[in-house]
Amino acid sequence: LSFIEDPDQRDAFSMVEKLAFLINDIDLWHRTDPRSSELADLITALGPYVGFQELWAIKDRPYDNTDEGAATLSRIRQAKSRSLEMGKLSLIAHSGLPFKLSTAVIDGFGSEVASLLVDPEGIVAVYDQSKKTISLRVGSEFSYPEGWDCRKIAELFGGGGHPQAAGFNPANSKEVLTGMSQALGQGLLDKLRS
Image (cartoon, rainbow, N blue to C red; front, side, top):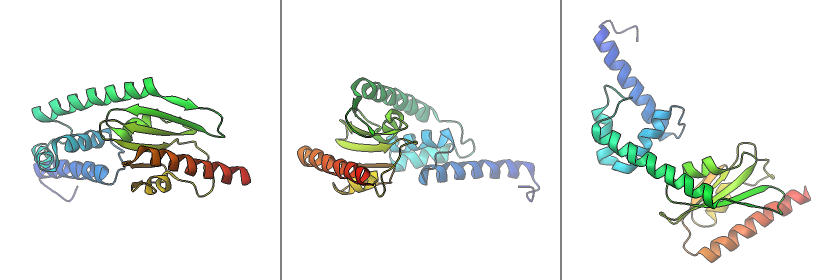
């Protein structure tokens, strides 16, 4: 920013640059700055139009909140905390498998709560009772059988995502659970054969 001679203009441009960084961090799911996760939650809670108005209101001070934004973020933190607590209370570690698999029931924030519940060396499947969705997460130290990923399981049920994180909205629980069992079983067979 040294090419901008006026210090006030330099400060204003610096704030716009910080806000642009946060928006990219949200949009590209990098989440390298804790504030970008917070703003992503805010936009989700407020909706795109009001969320944009909130971003516009803080454009000169991207690390501050309006009163509405602060109140909304407080409600979000409380709801996340309740969902995580529910997940911890319902978390079941399944035994008899060659890898760690856990399941839990939560109430909102499926992606984030699943990421907090997953064992670093395992897989977690969480059922979000508020959205009627299933989120799958793989721990950071999980050893993949060749060709296995969460996205393939989610795509079987019309969902999607990434190899380490995916989700879907089950239309028929029995079919979903049968399909998950088959997919996990195939993964186990492939692992045993290799």
